[in-house]
Length: 227
Image (cartoon, rainbow, N blue to C red; front, side):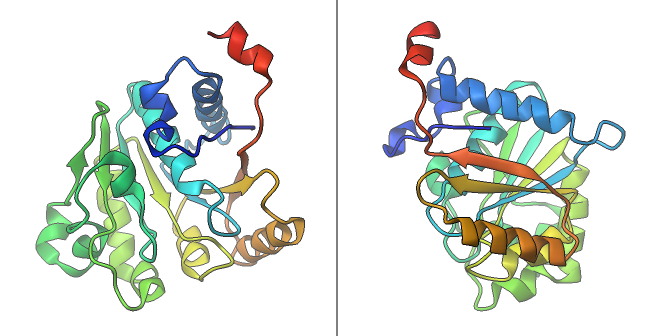
């Protein structure tokens, strides 16, 4: 899957603001491909991460979430990047209450701090307050309860995690979800880093379902054809 990603903040959610673009169509194709990954047992929880920083994982995940919701499915998008969260910025929502609230507070566990977005059917759970030891929280039994609770509220729960090579958070979470999608950036992600990230995920028996290539050039002819 090849996607093109703009550097302008206002253009990052292309599936919402420019749904007829080739990039938006690529996200819809990704959405369709995910439906056929495991036809006998559909994905209920999907983790999206990348080998390193600034490779487009959060933008890819946000656009995928919009595309899935546009197909009339209930989606919960969770910012599990408790080091450098960005999903609240992409959707223009407050960050204060979120995942860490739900992990640490019994009341929040029974009443998840979910926020509505501009997309019908898409709810966002921001990171909440950033903890000193993210991996400990994400690997806890309380996190298992959080995921179980959220699965009861949506058709698909999408999780954004820190880069695999930057921290252990992604590999910890990978053991708790149905599948992992790895985002790599054209011209930026080094082959050895991709191989190292893949090896770390495989070491914990993560279900790595595939990869998405971001920042790839789109044939200008496609832009004209779909205009």
